[in-house]
Structure formats: structure tokens, C-alpha cells
Image 1 (cartoon, rainbow, N blue to C red):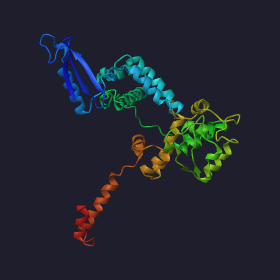
Image 2 (image 1 turned 30 degrees about the horizontal axis):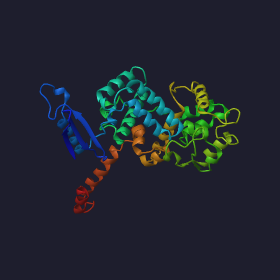
Image 3 (image 1 turned 90 degrees about the vertical axis):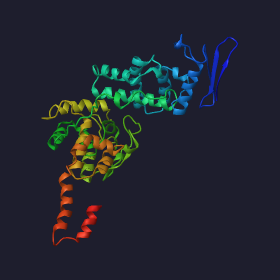
Image 4 (image 1 turned 45 degrees about the horizontal axis):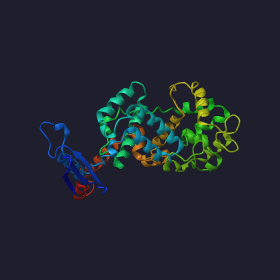
Length: 367
């Protein structure tokens, strides 16, 4: 219910009750506006704007809509603190950059053009993948603001996104994989076995222990230092041949599967340091070839063996098949000739005197 009342001092008070059940009011010099002072607005105009927003489902509290992005970041980060420590650390780094650029801006004043201009500015300093990550973080922060009723719409979306950093991964040859294995020191050789044949990520390698490995199955249980895995699907068990289990155990320490030089286990930093020393000795590997890229070799083996995308997704422990297709879709064999052959066989059966009943063939084609 909305109303306008003239006060003793000549001002007009416009009032309405919001979707939250609270009453909101604002005072104006004019009830219906003035040609001489149109910039002052009017009580009726304000009420019309609020009513239209409520009907459209885009209404926000007039008080909270004045909140700055910096103030909302404080609220957002407080609610995000329950995530894994590594995830929270990454969010804080991103939030610092967002605050530096937009912290003093009111949330409702932020426009898509502002976001696009910032993405262009960032591209001059940061790698494409990092700019893409910052765009995703800003979208996440403002999506939660919309959900909380602080702003009506999120100005960050597909049209403000920077160029996608997706690139086809470099897949090492089998010869290069074994050359890496031979080049690594004894306490680090399981890096290759766990990455190229089990598909572990570097933080999972550093935390892997003997209890995770059975004769024919590997079940990841944690990541370095002793945290929950990246996602629920990261806990998927991975089938392994017994020969591989024997090789891994032979290289393992008393507890850790990658014991390091002194047998006490390793950190991701130590793994990367040893990896760089070994990588430079292998002919043909690009300078940026990472421990993570061993997973690409693992995926290529699965795909070359004829496994379908759902099985590859499960073995790679991706959250969705979309991720698998985005990264490895180009590796799956071309099915064009197979589909042509299937249709041609039906057509040929219809023409052949020795083929199936024509009416039956027609039904197949109609389907």
C-alpha cells in the first residue's frame, strides 16, 4: 500500500510497504514534479518507480542499495571464511584487487562498461588466465549480492568476460614420460607414475600415502598438507593394474608414496623444484610443461583406448562431462565416417534384393 501526505511544513511524504513487510518513506518538495525544478523529482514519481520495481521483481532496499562494493566485500568474505584455507586465500587475493579498483563505488552504480574497461586494463599486466579468474570472482561476489537483495542485477556477465584462456594442452609422448621417470631422483619417481597413470594433481601427490593404494585401486583421501580434496568427485576411486601398484610401492617410503630424498614426505614446492630440474633434460618438452600436464597424458591414454566421455570424466574426477569435453574434446576420434556408414548400411539394405523387408526398412528410416 502506498500513500502521499502533505506535511505542515509544506513537504510531501511518500510512503509504501516493501516486499519485506517494512515501511519506507521519503520527503519531496513536490507531489507531482515541477517544470522549473525537474531535477528535484516528486513523491509520485518515486512511488511509481518503487512499485514498478516490486512488480518486476527487481526491487531492492533503498538503504542497502547505497552500499559500496568494499562494504559488501567485507560481508561476503566473512561468509566465505568457512571454505578451505587455500580457497579462502585465493578469494582474499582477488578481493584485494577488486577493492582497489571499485571499493569506494556504490554497488548500484557499477555498469557493464566499467567491468569491460577494467578487464582491458588488467590484460596489460596479468596473464589471460588470471584476468579470466578475476572476472569470475567479481561475477561470484555480485551474484551473491543479487541473491541477498542488495542489488537488482549483476553487471558482470558473458558480454563483459575477457577472452577465454582455454588452450589445447600439450600431451607428452610415451618416450618423454619414461624419460622424465628416469631423470627424476629415486625419492621422486612416483611423480610420473601417479600423474601419468593415475591422474593425480600435484597437491594430491604430495599427500598420497600407502593406505590410499590397493593392489588394483587407488582412492585419493586428501591433498597437501592434510586438507579435503578439491571436489566430491575428486574422491572417486581409480582402477590401476597390479604391475603399477608394485612399481609405486617399490619407489615409496614407509608412509608417503613420494618420500623425497630423506623419506619424510614432500611439499608441492619441492615437487615443482625437482620437476623443473628433470624437465630440462628431456628433449622436446616445452619450457612450461608442468606436473599437472601429466594428467593430460593420462586422459589421452583413456581416450585412445576407446573409453567414452563419461568414463574419462569419472577417471579424471571432473565435476562434469562439460569440463572433460572443454579440455579434451579434440582428442576424441572423429565419428563422422562411423555415422555415415551406419546410415549407408540401412539404405543399402533397402535397395538389396537380399536385404530386409522394405516396409521394415522404411520404419527404421522414419524413426
